[in-house]
Image (cartoon, rainbow, N blue to C red; front, side):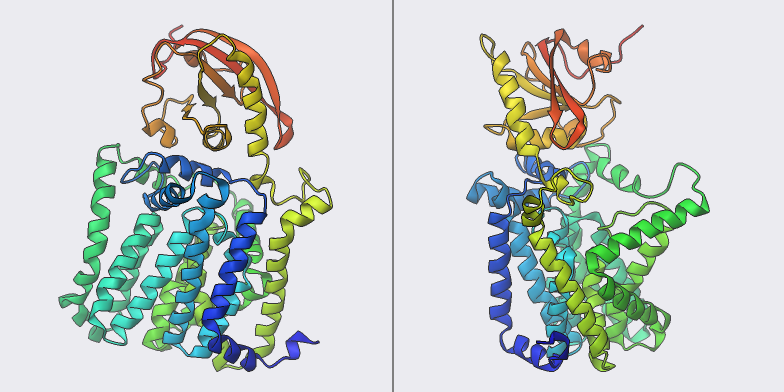
Length: 508
């Protein structure tokens, strides 16, 4: 059967007639994948899980919602890998439903159905419905905001202003980038004198939940030296001079990531439609101007930024939601059926391969090879078992030591999650600066006099002298190979009798 020859309209009409069943089926498929893939948490997931064990109003690098959601899931279902990720599946399902409803509001039921197809054909939605980071809640509340903006602005539903404010507040509690939402609405209202009447009442009604959500974040940061804002500003600007060739190289890497995350044909289609919408912005309808502000304008800005500095591949992902809605409406209006079908076939092919990756890697024995894209999801539980066996040997005749890591924050969080009993794991930062949430927390101040099992990415000679100085004695215990990199090892030490914390510079 030639899939591309099947009438697109019939597919879209079928989706509209069975949208609830389709979304439910997608949810079931994603849940089955969640519980059968066998992949460990990535570093960010275990890091946010470790946050969730100490509920707070904010954290070192992000607002608190991701930790709250993980904490709720594990409180109800236990601290295991699949449960940590369940919120991602639920939020992704809500996102899909709201994208359908939003496209239907802005264009038509067929546009809603086509938007659903586009989203299901983008590989990044596989990850955002599987990996529980800040992206799933941000995507969900970002598109909810656009939906309620439409209800408020174009359907004159007064209550929708407040619902939009709640959605934006939840997005801000997910990631700082959502602070763009009230700015975008402000710009949209200022573009037309007739829209400025909303400044008398409705806009402030919208801002109320946002202001409430910001209060605890600001108070927390005021009490913690504004670490979240310092961390955020460090993402922008380059401390070193960058050549023109290097700028184009980093922009090229960014575009390559987009081709992989969105799929090549859909990315090209979205980029073409988005650039045209930006160019003809003044001639667009008010509704399309709003969609363009929420998607293509921001994507264009990220593209320009990629020429100036390194940009993470996931930064623009929420902007694709409204861009795909715009693409759906434009493709149906201008009868671009062939391009749409090509994009869907290519995209769904990449999505199927993405879901099959764990199986394919195992069948063809591609673990730890340069073409294994799942390496970030593997081996942490294996490493934890290896380290636990080494730790058990030193516990004979000794009080159980606490665990201290020297290295990346992911080493601490992954050991906290995968070691038996999920113990509290501490981290030492050699610079003395606050470089992660582990430095925001007080460290092992209640472990004075206790022994420590130290796991380090550094050899005995490279172990910081100021760390050695806070123990009565530090003995090397050997090393274990890193299952993530055959050329690397983790070095183990016994620190006897912690005398103080934090370590201070050693005088010479």
